[in-house]
Image (cartoon, rainbow, N blue to C red):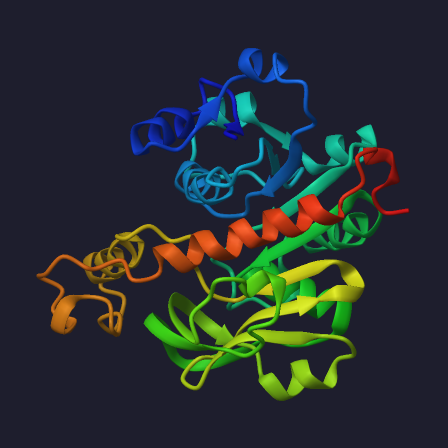
Length: 307
């Protein structure tokens, strides 16, 4: 089954060219099934790039997905056209006021990890989002900074500033092969990492009910399940395109920002060569498994979500 998105959203043409099944609202209305409603709370500055990345992964499953784009109510973005935001995004305040419920919600990262959470301009509203998920979302997926923020709000697990940026592609161990979220995973896998902060395994272990599913000896815990709050937290970037780390590296080099060549990304660590994507298959596995778990657990009557 395809992902249901507006035909005018840029991701529609991008995914169609890639062979991902997409459908517009007219086609979806002719199918007598209930699609899974997935929200994307997009905190990244490059909104369209992030939309493409997540729509590609959740649109590759056999289920029909209806994707809703959500933004923080008062925070304005400078990197995406106002017309795009007005056409495709709803502020969280409107979503909350409507009483609408979702089968799944993805909360993205944000390039503000150097700030204490309490100093983020939209922190109070984001805390409301985290609390709202407990009664209005069947399963929440916090990604990178979004995952760090949610695990901090719900469990008090802190992020810690690194001496140097964790940047590149790192091998991670499969800590719990029996987990339904890791169905089909190898014993280890490569994940792109791009962050100035880390979560400490000992602090995650000290929090009740948290289960680490993927972890690296070099860059620490990566994927954590929170069954009590029906949530997953991933601190790295399975969703990245093949050239996303290259874009970040080139940006920093051009601006004169000190940055190391991303490790294990370019062949022979040579930025003059084309990077290889070694995480795509596991990215599809993880998000496909997440969608499958939602499908298996979510009520057919959406009013029953969170009750």
